[in-house]
Amino acid sequence: MTKEASAPQDKPVFGASGRKIIYDKDGKPCRSCNTLLDFQMATGGMNKAPQKAKTEVAAPAASKETDVYAKVDPPDVEKLGRSSWTLLHSIAATYPENPSNKQQADMKQFLKLFGNFYPCWFCAEDFEKYMAKNEPTTDTQDHLGKWLCEAHNDVNKKLGKPEFDCNLWKKRWKDGWE
Image (cartoon, rainbow, N blue to C red; front, side):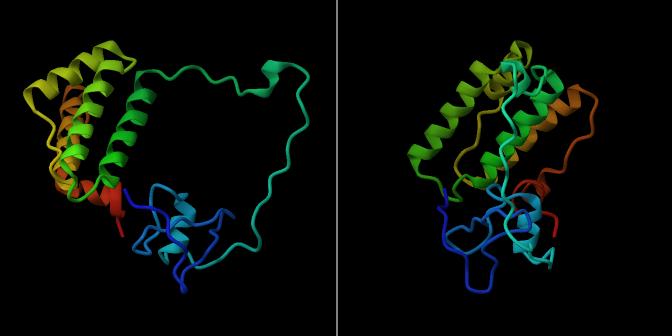
């Protein structure tokens, strides 16, 4: 994984949101570590810098404990699925280009555990069956990203959704659409 570096001299330190922009060791803004707005500002997709960093003021204490929390229901299968695929594709996008043997084994173990503990038992069994027939390819970032894309397309097919062109996975999940 890449570690945070200081902002290159010609790049902004703070984004439009007022948050500090996180750069990787190569001086590129981290897509997963920044808001979309800040990422666009750091990559030249947005020109205006913030006037000053936002500061948040704490809200007055609520009278009842339950008033403090938004009353959001547990995720249904659709929200859980979208969030899970976002997480998995984002992990692939930050997976090393040339992972060590340990990283490859760890990723296979992670995917196995992910399938074992996935909250939707039907979805979990389906993912485990897919992995049994199509062993995860973890030897490179590109192979892992394409394997996940193909796994996602397998689910999309079953749900009657359109398939994604797996040759474009890096544009969707890593580099952006330009």
